[in-house]
Image (cartoon, rainbow, N blue to C red):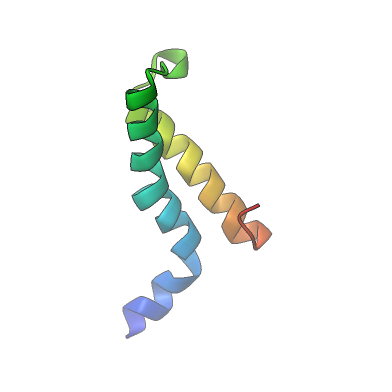
Length: 63
């Protein structure tokens, strides 16, 4: 129970890294979009998903 209390505030970041990053990488691969700056698709997904998760955590909303 203490573990859940500890990670609950970081839920948006975990969602961004654990769910959005692979979805973004899969979409990029399926649509044939090349990752910028020589990164792989998953690296790009982790950057975008992590950034979006941090914005949601500290901003209080996803949009």
